[in-house]
Length: 235
Picture 1 (cartoon, rainbow, N blue to C red):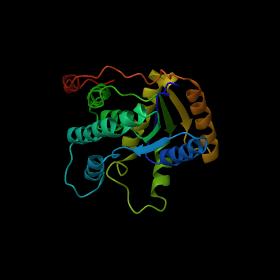
Picture 2 (cartoon, rainbow, N blue to C red):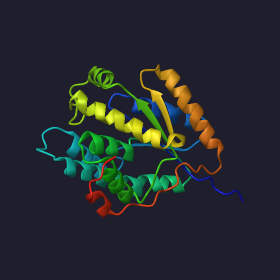
Picture 3 (cartoon, rainbow, N blue to C red):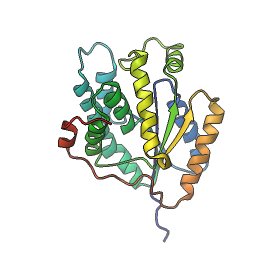
């Protein structure tokens, strides 16, 4: 009897307007055409409670949401997402593609909101019990290009999208810093490249990952305790 292959977890990251959703959708279609079972999901969201939290934290009109509350809402959504959606799919041997994961909180709340990247990383490591992607595809986008893309034909930007370019510049730097720390676990691509070219490069990297019968890049890290986040350390 053949042993079931372990699932593969791939996260798409980058600033708003980078094209993450487009590339995740392209990859899913290609993998499914080759017989793979693919689960596409997103953050915040992915679960019933996560979608409610998404609306709460991204929509305008919910009153003031301070930085710590914002970080905790994202972590709560991610905890449900990891436990209810991602882990079960991986256990079934599926390929999970998520539009955003922990790196987004480290970049947006840790760097963008000045809460400290280490603190936010610790909080989310605890929330997910250390679940990490096997591969993170980072689409690096210039903040001004990202704004032009997301406002083209869009009624209005959400709470985070509407922040100033300086906020998005800090986010971009944080994403690149995260990728530089663990280059073997990342594929960093310029978001301004043609859609087809990006899709081809992403597929090539994923094909290499799938050839490994037991990918190791996504080994789970030891979950941090909540107290570590309370220290507010930054990197």
